[in-house]
Image (tube, rainbow, N blue to C red; front, side, top):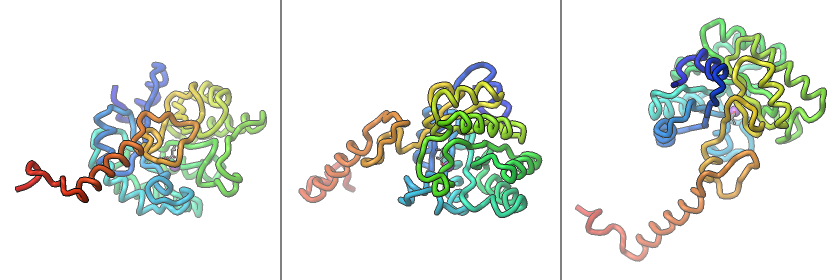
Length: 266
Ligand code: KIV
Ligand code: NA
């Protein structure tokens, strides 16, 4: 059954049916993702890396998420849409976080926002956003917006204490009203314990098989980045190689005079 409301996510977990989520940043790919029947689309701030070419997600601005969220919404009008709250848009105050979350929902017509972390301040903001009627997805484990303070792109929850802390964070996010939680880069056993400890679905990336669903980055899934292949992704296509070949054929055909042919001409 289609995911339309946060309650549908929780029912999926109760029925032990997995949830598929994929990132998307534009209308062309949104059309494809919706036709493929993926459960939900995330307009992730990974766009900073895969779309904008930065080395982290930190340069992404609220306006970027709004613009790309609107593009995706037009391409996939029938799919549950989650948009990321970017770095710096929810840490100054509860008021700032709530205002930006509501603006994202209003302007993109997404069904939910996602934000990183589970410290006291973030929990306060989540409670307020949820109380205002906007569903929130949590995100713990490796949180890319804090990669500088975390010391790089690293697996989280490796020690017993760190694993226990992640379980507590997941419970706190559930209590704050999150309808689901992304678990990023952690040992399979830790995400299993978290998934057993909460009733809301866990959506993993680099977190193993026991999560209630998975999220992947569009470009990773299709092999669109020629020089990047994270361990947590399975390449379902070698799009970079195939596209480079196709584009190269176009280049040759123009230069050899075989394109456009009569069938392309008026
Ligand atoms: O920005 C993003 O794409 C994400 C997912 C990787 C979970 O946050
Ligand atoms: Na993100």
